[in-house]
Image 1 (cartoon, rainbow, N blue to C red):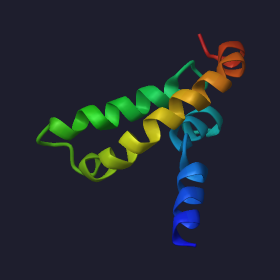
Image 2 (cartoon, rainbow, N blue to C red):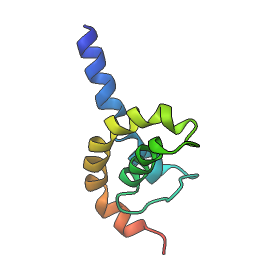
Image 3 (cartoon, helix red, strand yellow):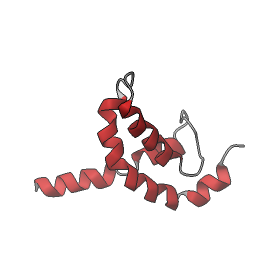
Image 4 (cartoon, rainbow, N blue to C red):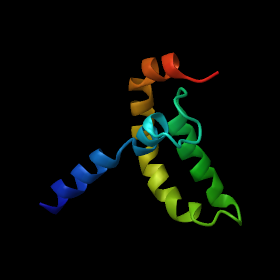
Length: 86
């Protein structure tokens, strides 16, 4: 039962940066192609910096989320390409 719950949590949380960046009103980059994946990469790259702060805690989660965000960004590509801001 624990394995099923863990698998369900990973599936439900997968691509969460894509969902947050694409559909949230206060997103950092808004509806732009592959914005969720770019956000994950920024968090992961901040891991090596001394002043990363909370990003050091979020980096492992971003690393897990990155492949799911790439898939979700690809699925939402028609939407983000059509609604991107100039």
